[in-house]
Image 1: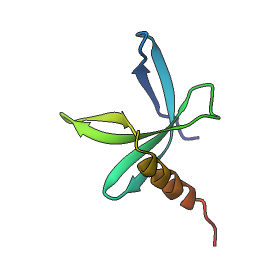
Image 2: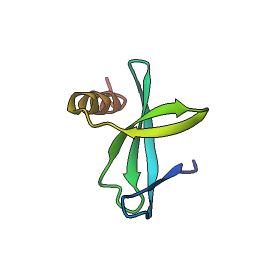
Image 3: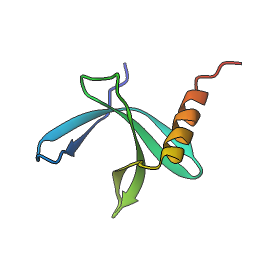
Image 4: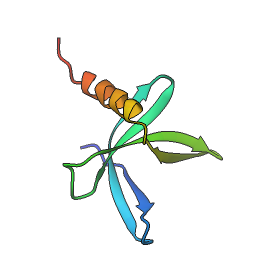
Length: 81
């Protein structure tokens, strides 16, 4: 069984919030992570993965068009011919 990758963010109240990495998507030379709150897998968020000083950082995708393209690419991974 594959181990789940968990990332932790600090919310606006200073509390740790854990997200599970559902999957990664490569699109237009960029890498994106689909993250779901631990314990609430019905919701998912798209973050762009960027490297800063040799570390991965997750930047929320606010652009609706970019968000939709990432979701379309993710869904295409499951298309069966």
